[in-house]
Image (cartoon, rainbow, N blue to C red; front, side, top):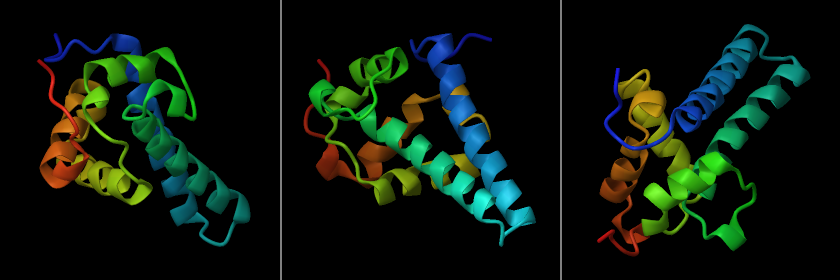
Length: 128
């Protein structure tokens, strides 16, 4: 199936892996809520996912982690935004995850559309 945007397959798979890792850690924590290892894994996985998306909106010199996938998303979409904070990113992720099970893999551009709709003050320029 051909995807709607020009985001590469490796980037799509990385986005989906980040989500799956966060969901698995959250499920493991739900099964063992008192386990400090499970608590730590859930916090780290969620933070890793949030930071990935934040980095896609940061100027290259401000990125915490640089990868081909982050740079691809930055060039395609994120360069039009100021970086959202952790709470803003989590709000977007929660909404999209609840609405569309495979949004990150099939339509990663929805993150930026949702960012623009819910936090218009972060849109600092538009693509020409």
